[in-house]
Image (cartoon, rainbow, N blue to C red; front, side):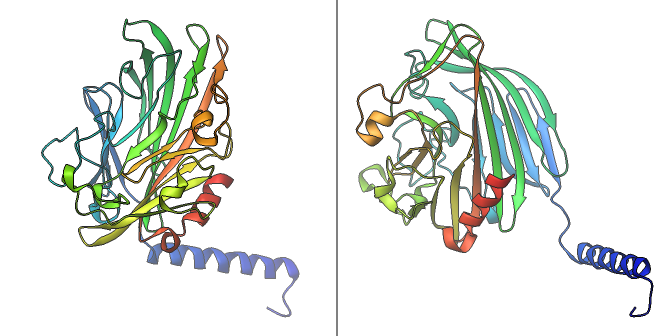
Length: 326
């Protein structure tokens, strides 16, 4: 190529790079094949012919994701109370249903403890796009007396990462029926309840004897000391059925009060909550309040990563950096 004209050399290099890329793609793993099947009460999500999760939008006081299966089809969240007969699970906090989004004070209504209901209205779209399949749904937030407090549009997307599966969630809350006030309480918001093995401690009185979990946040704070701390992400990991696995929640950089504070407990509750400032930071009551004016909206975005190994082995920090840059 030394004596070739420059434009011919450039063309040859480009063709060589293209051939290398095509050869690599042929040798590499095929892209994941996604299937989304919509039913009367749920959307079943499969990847490469195996169940990944189900978005269950009827039958509960709020929509949930359950089951949630990580690497090697490992169950990553608690089964109770959706399935109440699993041995080794604590039967506490029945409002902790696998993966969910809710808050404990929205115009004074406690949606976290299911005093109010987040009711499915319609499936807007079920998209089997090969690279990032997704579900878009409309919901309404109802007080115990049936009064409309707010509405939301939720989009849930699914993707594979090296050694991991991931779920992207965006919840856009609309002040569609007057102003909406998110109150200062620790009870919220983007949340999951881990498989009992990922807990940080056992609870023999409630039948939990297999906990072997560890946890860390993006600031390097570990285990129980993470509660109430600000961080871009939190990760819990441990061994389930002999397989080392973990689950992380990422807080998007554009979210309100990023990096968020965390309602992250030793018994496996992990929740990103930007509103409980008086609880987490010892500030005056009401410091975490946030109000949407009539007609306004606010978006909350998160990624949940189900990975192999511990946080370091899974490269959680790098995965977060990639997410933040998208």
